[in-house]
Length: 335
Image 1 (tube, rainbow, N blue to C red):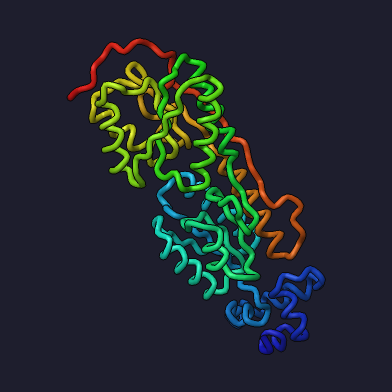
Image 2: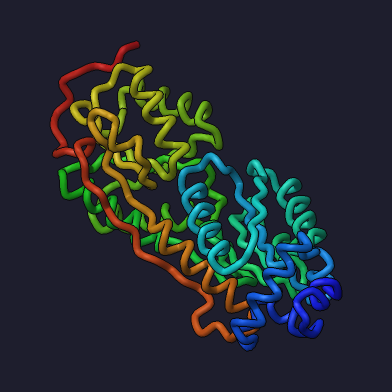
């Protein structure tokens, strides 16, 4: 920086202001400093600058599964927002493993990120608070515990499944199964609550089926359900893993959707539109969730007050060809 200052014939302070993006430097001086940097092939030492400022302009994003289409959409949008604000993003995946999640969060702390956005695989808010530690700006997205110690952003899961179930009920369905991966996750509990509320109001039995954490497990469980004599007239899947399992099981059993059974998915993906029939879905507001998460994290990093720390955003019901009026079954499931 001293060499750049001599070359540009300016003070060291002026060089520092230019390199730090300060707008108080005259345009003519700024151009001289940048020209000197180019001539001398000066590269700013970001690590040294971070040590001085105690800011790395890096944030961490923790996801359970990067292949999950919702999380992929959230990560992409957050990365774009962070990049526009001059931040670099570090993304780590936990594979739905609590110990790995804690280790990944510790790794990000060691890398001295300025803040974290967490889609948690941890079983409790206490574990999350311990892993993140005191003083670290942190926003929890989607998977939120009831007593979360951090600001949070999520879909209004209760209303989303309530509206989805009401749609199926309006088509005359009364034997509806809501299939989920794990009843222990907060967002799943909220979705079950919305489903049960709608079924209770319709005076119909609320049947919840736990099908496992993987597509393979979901496929096996739903294949058994579809081959049973008490197969439901409509299936409401609790997330994208269950939806994939349902499509695989439907093909395995030779079921015709929606002739043999209506199908409604929680979470929408591009490939749901390409299936024949196209699958009706509850569409989570991924872009809006990402915007709110970045806004809250920016406020935390900047030590600005947060008026509303917990944001819940409404989902949209997208009706396609896989949900139709309930009719008497005409086809049998292949044995």
